[in-house]
Image (tube, rainbow, N blue to C red):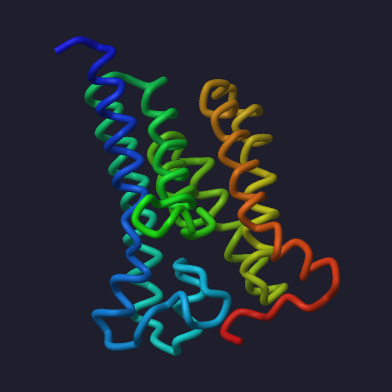
Length: 196
């Protein structure tokens, strides 16, 4: 099988994995209806938490992170490091723009964490720890995510991981675009706290 075909297969698979709407599936299996009709309407773990079911929210977070992690592993083993970074981007795009949900998905936080933990474990752990600290202090998931997103390319640059840094810049830009309504509410002081 040619390397070009493996590359295409890796990216298509990464998008497909990223587009699995675990938040939607888990809330339905838990008998809580359509997560898109709850809170912000987002399919990510933060909105799933608004159902009051912490276990389902945790499972959503872990599953969303895992699909990014697995997408990168598969691409890395099939083709190599550079394609693994591209697969990270493809999985994020799949999560935010899933074909199954008319391209209206999540905001990419958990998927970003999962991909970074595979591409650059230090950057992934830094993102996760920074998100946790800011979330505890500020009580707003979106603020924590935005700060962690912005810090990641800078850390990757310092670490000298240039390919991952360049891909992360695109991933961060897409994720910040997905957070545009959150950014607007943060600026106006109307962004809800975690659990509200």
